[in-house]
Length: 146
Image 1 (cartoon, rainbow, N blue to C red):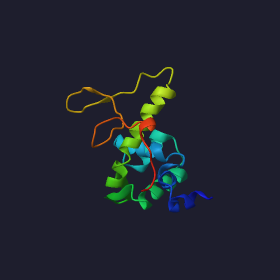
Image 2 (cartoon, rainbow, N blue to C red):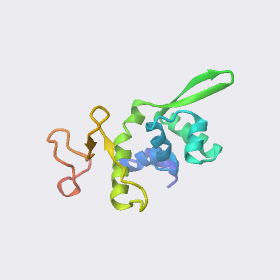
Image 3 (cartoon, rainbow, N blue to C red):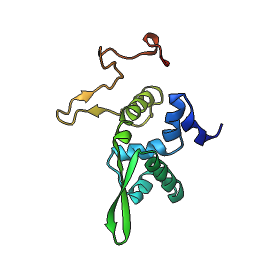
Image 4 (cartoon, one colour):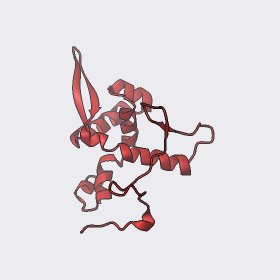
């Protein structure tokens, strides 16, 4: 199966990976959530080639995750902003960070933390059921199509 064919699969994991599963894409999204908007700023932050970055930004725009907005007419310059579809990926990044901190910790880096913007209180992100508030854990969940 070719990478482009994943978007047509019935498996939601495969379809999701067709959007965010290639190299660099999640790092581009990480930077978007940190407030990076401009091509040169992405390139500086990521150390990525112009060609690869342009390809990833174009793909994220085509899939509706990012929108491109003109911020300068002479010369024409654009910035990239998360759409609602893009902002909906935030829990995935939080889950990846949480997993990496628990299972792939960096020996020299301070632990990564989340804080409430208003109070400064530490947050402990977990995946919970919207109705019961109970943590969603593999041993208590079945998943599939009804």
